[in-house]
Length: 124
Image 1 (tube, one colour):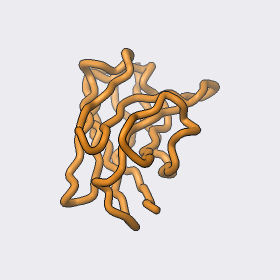
Image 2 (cartoon, rainbow, N blue to C red):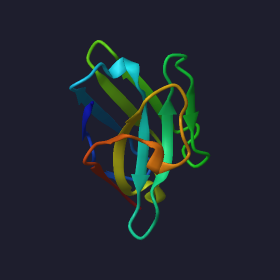
Image 3 (cartoon, helix red, strand yellow):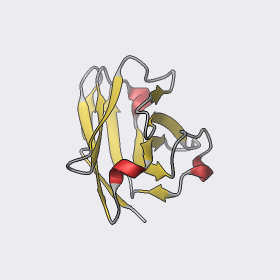
């Protein structure tokens, strides 16, 4: 079992950047398909990005494609989400997620492990 802890959220103006981090413990991080989901107030959880194991393929939602970049440092058991050109619509709680490999899933219920979340607020 893996434990996940996010950090790096905050308040930023539209057009700005943030980098989220997710530190993993309790298991070998590199053995999981990992990703980011988010939930805005009054909305359902939404998949943002995913990094599949072992092939390393990446997936991005259409709403963030070209602006966000997912990466991992397996030596540090840390997952990152670089968020550029942020928009007010990106305001949400961002969650780090993991599931047994290999495929990313479109259903939040398929992810076995979730962090507590980190708040990202983008002001206009």
